[in-house]
Image 1: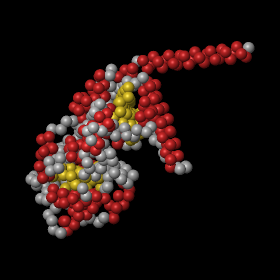
Image 2: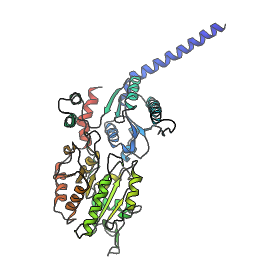
Image 3: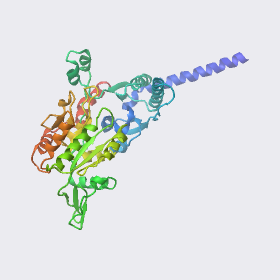
Image 4: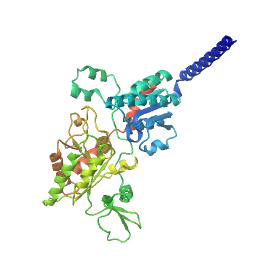
Length: 436
């Protein structure tokens, strides 16, 4: 009797397993019905390129599972899209027991389990579109998920085009030859990166003035019915906005506050700029806004607090996703401190600045000239002394409509840059259609 019962139980278990296998095979054979999982083992709010991918897919009617850490709020367009579903991955806190190598191995294993579990919970996708870096353990996990779902894996390698790679490795290097086979989707600004109309500038300044001193008016308006910020003045009767006389210049830098971006270069240049003013050089006061999050932010904020500038104000806000392009479109000059660790990737922050027709001073690295054309749309510097001289030269006579700063902006306006949507439709959409 016992043997017969065991055989019956085993037969039932086999039937259940067979049913599960049949269900999985039928579900996988459906092909995901055009759905795409867009995945990044990082903060979704700080992954604009993957948000752009999701929005482009949604624009073409694809159902998108946007998967990653929900540490920062994604752009409102992502949140409002009916075709995009946010899929959070649990944020793993670092293990603090044992040697660092042991901690790292355990972290990778746990991340792999978390990521695979999350990927297998979603509706079956036709494609998994994965951001790299980080490649460990993301690529291996995505590959396993694709085997399970019978999906296709697309890896976004972040602009490692063979023309840029050849600058470092030479045209005949094997890696360069392999890269020629890949489709390259260069970073392009989204449609909302553009020059900000004066009325919207004023609204943004008034909003920021509630929390940040540099945006508050320096003096009271001579008109009793005027609403003022440090940069703009609005007549409350007719809503007309003008720029404030004697306004400061608005300098903006976006940084990840890491060792790859030496923020001390900008601080030293600002100290020289302050000295120029004290020596009688006719330069405007500066409001320097540095946006972003990162591990060294508290350290550099400590250095900023020790500076006692009379003509420069610095603030380090974390802006809402919708406010960042508005601020870029309102600024007078951008500064980029990004140095490519690979020597190959071009800074997306400069792409966004150029989308807003904002001239840039950018620190030199090998392939930067592919993006920043020295003396055409901006300037390239190598150290703090050179940056200080560039700031002095660009802001002499500010806010005159003559000189290099104005010419750079005119050149950017005339360049008619390709936007993300157009580039994506030309490059990625055909790739998806060819493989369906």
